[in-house]
Image (cartoon, rainbow, N blue to C red; front, side):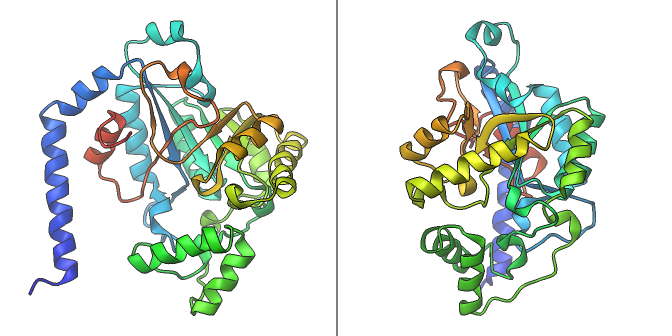
Length: 317
């Protein structure tokens, strides 16, 4: 009987073969041509040094070499712009001969804003990071420090409990993990949140816009009105008083949002908010609700062909 690892390897090889055929056949080029007046928003979490170990949720930590290759691939096919540019007027879109793309980083990981931003600046590009002030100063997120089986059915069940039962709150999730019997691991500095002085220095160099990822990275859809308002207003005010390049842009933690959350974000003074699903603003990008902008969350294991296909609009709605 075929064991699970062997079956998984076979599936992976078959998937890679299909991706190669689709790219070499021109299907990706045709798909991208059909979307030349659209926009592709890419979401990364962390970028780590080549050969470095990732934290518990390996999928969030892309290596430097792979990140650099993806930037180069994106530059070949898209015009890379600042995040708010994807929502510009239709006249701007009609003048473009290829789709636009925007690069974002969630959580303000030290690796993303040092290693990753070095690659961004080397190509004279721009990016946006969404900061969780409660973790600035080297804080580690529960999904990196808790030793949980992230890439498994058991891990999916734990994540569901973490977001719904614990509301995404870091302390509560860690408590649940301890009750289940999950230990913790040592999280290296590049997989922790950046420090305030480092962020200020990097932002001062240009090329980086700063948005808010709420104050504590809780599941906004479950918060009462008072807590929701605090989680939204506090970080924007706090960031504006300390860093250059802060914009009234929001990333919903865990990608969780609702019409009530959107209304609260508007009330808090944001002008744009992004999800962490989808990725393409199809057709007239300006017609998309600026408070539900889709993004494609790039997993660490994505192949080069897989990235090209998703950047073309295939398998990425």
